[in-house]
Length: 221
Image (cartoon, rainbow, N blue to C red):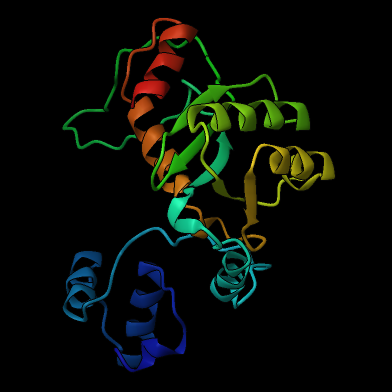
């Protein structure tokens, strides 16, 4: 069975049950099939989504991009920038329960367009903007510069339209911020994406009484 399953990477349990019945003329229960697959050392999890347009050499492309910005890196603040829009309606939490699980919360929907700078060193910055236009990105860059006053900043970010705009690049340069753009369709190379994922899980568990308390939770998590 293990040899036959090497024909492809991802399998549904139902597909494996059908394979066993077709190839070996045996019908196993779902629980028995799960025990067999665990014995093979297989993993049962949600597949990590990967955009088909991601370049195969994304890591190498990033290394090359970094090479052009590493001059003086030992004296620089190095960090990652991204936006996210968490909502109180998000339900990322999963729980075990003997009855249908419920949680008491404020069902009023709040949404916070959140800008984040996640540094390896230096001062992190969280702020909220009405939109993600060039003007908002520039305002946030100014705030990052002020919070890390007098420091050269090397900032990694994706290729969102307002990020790669000439006006954004010129403004960043005037502040002493070196922009390093990640390869397209490669969010896995930006650690702040994992911060956002954890943030959404935490936010799904809180009782937000107001938009202000919702945003304050984001600031302090």
